[in-house]
Length: 119
Image (cartoon, rainbow, N blue to C red; front, side, top):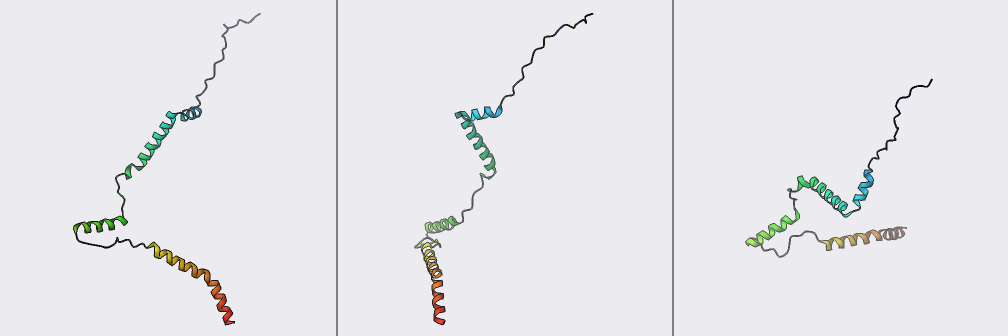
């Protein structure tokens, strides 16, 4: 005897859903001018968010304050300096370094001469 068969269902293969490749799409988008503009805008927004708390802070200018105070005194007629009050003298510093360098290079010869004279 033959077995009764159930009504046959057609077995169809389901197509596997392909997940979108986000990284490939992102790389493709970054290569366009719109992608570059979006990257620059995002970078600008990040910089703005990071710097926002510090935008209203003023830096403390220490060197310029003395010059400004001298200029105010001159404009009010309270001071008449002949030169600015810069204390850095690079010329003297360079001369001092040259003298020290020459002395250091001459030390071995000087010590040899002194040892020869004593012997």
